Amino acid sequence: MSRITVKFIMEPGCDDLRPAKAHEDDAAYDLRSRTDITVPPGKVALVPTGLRIELPPGFEAQVRPRSGLALRHCIGVLNAPGTIDAGYRGEICSILFNFGDAPFEIHRGDRISQMVIASLPDVELVPAETLSETARGSGGFGSTGRQ
Image (tube, rainbow, N blue to C red; front, side, top):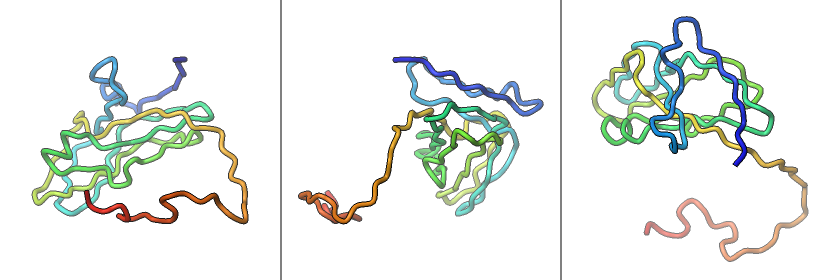
C-alpha cells in the first residue's frame, strides 16, 4: 500500500493535541478537544480540535464517533461521519451530541472523536433514461425487515 502525505498545522498553543493513533494498525487518528465544555443532555456542541490539515486531491477525512464515548456516555458525532474535503483549510471541529440523560464534561486534551483519511474514486455521474433492474429494486428504509 502506498503512503500519502497529509500536512497539518496545530493552532497556537495546541501542539500537545496532535492527532495520533493509539496503535500502529488503528484505522483512525484520535482527535482531542482544545477547550473545556459541557454538553447538556439532548444538546449539541461544536468542539474545536486545534487541527488544520491539507489533504491531497482525491482524498477526504471522515470525523467519526469514538466507540467508548458512545457506549459509556451516549456521546456521538451528530453528522457522522463528518466529511472534511480536500479544499478545506479551517480548523477541524467535532459536532458532538449528548444522547444521554446527564451532562457530559469535556476537558482540554480529552479524546472526543476519531479521523479516518480515505481515498475517493474518480467518479463521473452520467444522466440516464433508465436504470438496470435488481432483486432489491427500490426497496429501502427497512424493507428487508428488522432481523
